[in-house]
Image 1: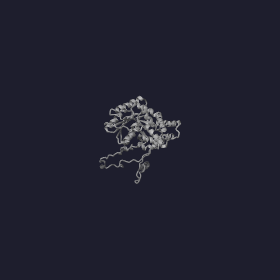
Image 2 (image 1 turned 60 degrees about the vertical axis):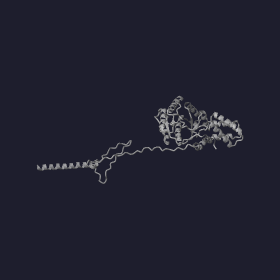
Image 3 (image 1 turned 180 degrees about the vertical axis):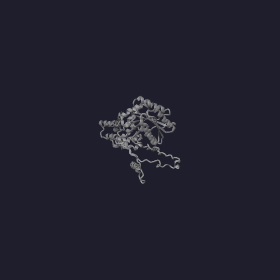
Image 4 (image 1 turned 90 degrees about the horizontal axis):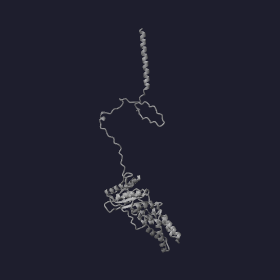
Length: 407
């Protein structure tokens, strides 16, 4: 009996040992083997799935026990934390102040550019006047040439009559005599004795105030900025008033022009009251002891009544500070006789004191100078001859006529 019990005990012990070995082997197979000491484990972030990719089943990654995580030393833990400064963002650099080209003789320097577009008028007239027999057909061709150049009907008839008389008295005509004759008559027509100075001095303690008017699209705001350069080149300090509040880009455009020459621009919200901005601009000019305040106005021509009310209000408000010294009308020379319609409307609304002819190069016709002066009774004071910042020049009749008829 004892032998049977002993055999059963030995059998149970053997079965237990075998079961332990099996369980142990299963556990060893489930645990990953630790990496060798010489090759540290690098854990990379899982790649993000792309559109259309199947989601991948996450894999088990080794985790460290709390004993394996290194803790900071006591001295390091009580040290004062150091603030990490963010990146320093540099302020935008102030725009570099430009030195405009001197205005003295500017039109003479631009004569070659003017001559390229205007020479056809002068050459055409000289060719016709050089014919041996000046019959009625020839004089009609001379009239057509002048009308095509936008000289205007009344001015053309006046010039042709004077040329007829002088050619008859002159008799034999040399090319040089004809050129001298034509130059004298065109100078008379343009008005060499007119006062073409832009009035920028009030005679009081307040700055001179110049209001710039004209239809949008004629280069009015650009002309105001270029005029600021002309004044700065002549040693004047300028404040700009962006009173064209109905065109979103007008104030930004004017401010850019001002920043180039160091002129301050007074502006308001889009759609704001133009008269209020004009008032603030003159007030700022007085505070800064500026020499000149230039006010750019809106160029809408929806109704004459609305235009009159708006410009009239600007004029009245500005004159609370002092007199309005100059009102310049900007006209696009390429519009020819159509531009005279716009000129008449503005002349009825405000007292125009001077004209600025833009885009006088290219396809422009030089005769517009004559016709617009005769129409409005005020002189052309400035001409724009290109897209460059210094292409606005004081109008000089002699230089203009010389470019018109060529050498």
